[in-house]
Image (cartoon, rainbow, N blue to C red; front, side, top):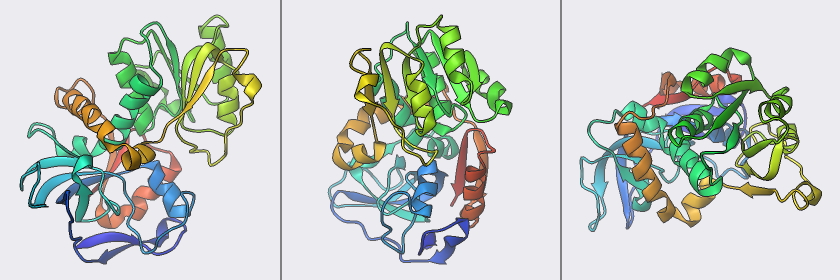
Length: 321
C-alpha cells in the first residue's frame, strides 16, 4: 500500500510517499480502507519534533474516514461498514488498523469528506464545551483560533447550545466574516481581545475561555476572565508555554482546566463513543458542518502541511487517499 512516511524531524520535505506493508490486525482491531484523512495542527507539531521522541519511520495522522475491510473473529463491526476512526500508527495511508473502541459507524447519508473532517475537531469540541467547560446559556465565552478546525466547531456547537455571547479571536481580521457566518457575535484579534471582551461584558469578563494557543494569549486571557470563570487550556499552537500564578485563581475563585483528546484516546477511550454518536448525528442532520478549505491527494501531503503552517485557510484540510 501507499503511505506518507517520515524518517526524521524537519520541514514538510521530510514527508515521503512510499510503498509499505498493509498492517496486520490483532484482537479487538479492524482494518480500514481509508477514503480521506484530515490534517491537524498536531501533525505539524509531531513532524517537527514538538510532540516527544519520534519512533522512526512513522506515519502521521490522527483520524480518518473509510470502509472496514477486515475484522477480528469476534467483532461488533462487519466488512463494508462505513466508519470514522482514530487509527493506530497514523492515518496518512491507504489502509490503517484501529482498536474497535476508537471506531464509530457513520450513516450512508454522511459523505466521507464531512466525516473525515470531523473526528478530532468535533469530538474534542463537544467534550470541551459540555464536559470540560460546562457552559451555560447565560455565559459569555471566548474561542481562540476561531477560524481553525476546533474553533470552527466550537463556535457552531456554542450557538446550537444557545450560548448568550460568543467571541472569537483570529490572527487576521480577513477571517472575521467567516467566523461570524459560523455564528460568532464578535470577532477580534489576539492583540485586541482583552479590551474588547471587557467592553462587551461591561468589565465583568468572559465566563469561559477556550485556549489552544497558549503563550502570551494565556496571560491576556486571564486579564479578561470573569470571577468564577474557567480557562480551558487544550493546546499550544504558538509553540510557547502559557504561564499563570496561584494568585490568578484563588482570590478570584477562577479555575484552569486542561484537556487532551490524545490522552483520553489512550487512557479513557470509552468516554468518546457517546460523544461520537452525538456529533455524527449533528453532522448527518446538517445542524453543523465543517467547511473544507482544500483537499489534497495523499502524495501531496507536504503541500497540505505547508498550507496549515501558513495559517492562510479557513476550516479543515483533507488528504484524499
